[in-house]
Length: 480
Image (cartoon, rainbow, N blue to C red; front, top):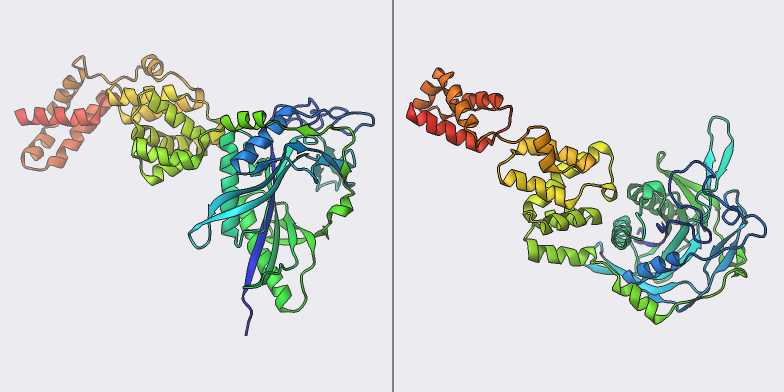
């Protein structure tokens, strides 16, 4: 009889904090600079250079810990984690082993059974990032870029509470949305500002003892994480069933080829020879500071979704779409505060905004148009100063350059021409030019009026309200 196995998963999630400068020096943390331009003696590991802690890193780490229901360590310290690798210029990493800044937290997700499930967080610790190796496949050479060296990280270490790829993705999505709402990081997996290492083992269902685990690295998308977990679960199951057994090791996932391969045997803490960093003093966190940081917490997505339902009476789908990105929610609320109808503001964000974001490759956090200009555009349509077709053209300019919609409409002569009698004249002219359509309409073929509508729209160059055009045509036809 075949055995029934379950998967046991814990995650180590690294998040780059979006401070302007690095954790122990004043170098820029900006992404995408020319190689080795954001470096100094401290982050390049020069002898005799001394680190100075960036207070904002501690502030953001505590904010994340509070949002994830952690206890804050009032007396925290840094340690040296010693290892040798080309992108690690000091030959050690400053991290926290013994006194991490946060402990004993949890987040709630929807489990595989459809019920709420708490995933426990063992700790969150602060540390510095390493540099980056760039491999030239043509020459076979490897280059070292130290721009990322010293960028502040928090590592969020979960307990092994997840049982499937779906639960892992749900957990990561919850972490990402929470940290994004805090404004502590953009959490972009494709840029490396959020990275997950998956610790996975299998065991016979119903047993308490853990199996031998592996750690999978190089996971830069939710899709890759899900595929890696499914592959590693199957690989370990085959190894156990065949009697081969599982080796504790670190494995690298190749998402293009869809398989993993061993990197090294898994190190334990003693292999890194941790010891307290002699150049950094302990971090003493007062309760007053913790209370101050807690008071700055934003309204998170779960609370926002409940409020939107009560205040704006939007559908669950609309609410999910808008609150999925904090910037979208901010624009929505700002537009409503400027007088826009909530449903109309939501539609503009979900349809035209999403279309243009996709076309231009723009992330939500990079949207630059103001809520006031979105509200102004909606007002122009509501007052029938422009029609929906023109509004889309105007919105594209708003999206790209944050133009004032009213000024743009005036400058480009896009206002509908109904008030000065031009529309009525165009309708009369179109009816006069369409005797066959008039005859058909009188014979009960109401669709014949469509040809007349087309003539009017061409005459007005689209600067009119189609509903008003139809009304005036019906009145004119009734007179014939």
